[in-house]
Amino acid sequence: MIILTGPCVLEDRETVFDIAKKLQPLSEDKRVEFYFKASFDKANRTSLSSYRGPGLEEGLRIFEEVKKEFGYKVVTDIHESHQAAMAAEVVDIVQIPAFLCRQTDLLVAAAKTGAKVNIKKGQFLAADAMKHPVEKVLQTRGFDEVNYQNSKEAGVWLCERGNTFGYGALVVDMRNLLLMREYAPVIFDATHSVQIPSTGGTTGGNSAFVPYMAKAAAAVGVDGFFFETHTDPSVAKSDGPNMLQVDELYKTVNDIFAIKEALGN
Image (cartoon, rainbow, N blue to C red; front, side, top):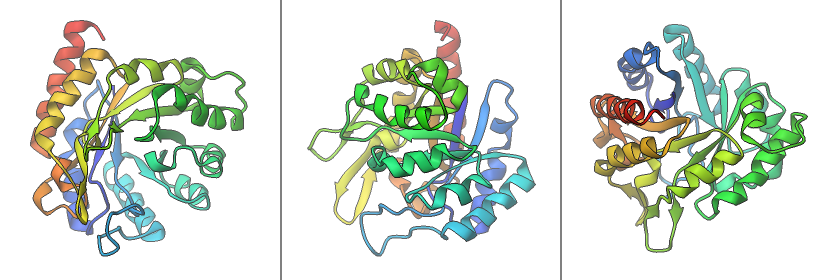
């Protein structure tokens, strides 16, 4: 099972390495294909004054240190086309943010790298609309048909993170997990799915719902999970309200495996 996890954004080096160290047992779990996740820049923060991260060059330097110290594969998101090639020199997965999943130049730039591409489903899109972002990446990589097997071979994933229905919260339609799997392997983003975007100058959320959402997705059947985690979410510089504390992450992962094993997923 694929698991992408780590802090929302790269904070100070001590915090990043503390989180990375606590994730070592998960990275060594033979049942898991593990990736360390963090952002070098949160370019879509609600407020201009919100912390965005260290930037591309410093962020990649930190990722290189994490890879050297722990041997982790790394995933990070890009927001502009020119970032793709430089990021892919260090990271193993280039992630396309949900708000940017229709941006052709960004998708093509990511496709031209040797990295896997994880495309987050836009909060404003239905599942079948995600065929088109996948198609852009597959065609750039020389594939003619959009289907699960070609996407798996090409290293293209789709990531569900909920839909906005206009009342200040995200709602996950579990049918999307099945429908998008026609086009690509599907990752369920359990932490962003409990965001509450309209809370004034910052994005809120309720992390208490994360384990339940993850277990529901495990029952439906997905290829992997995306969790943002922190040693102390209350002081996290981004997305703290919907992040899991590391110990809670381990409990949730164990529950997921119990469900998968019971159902044979």
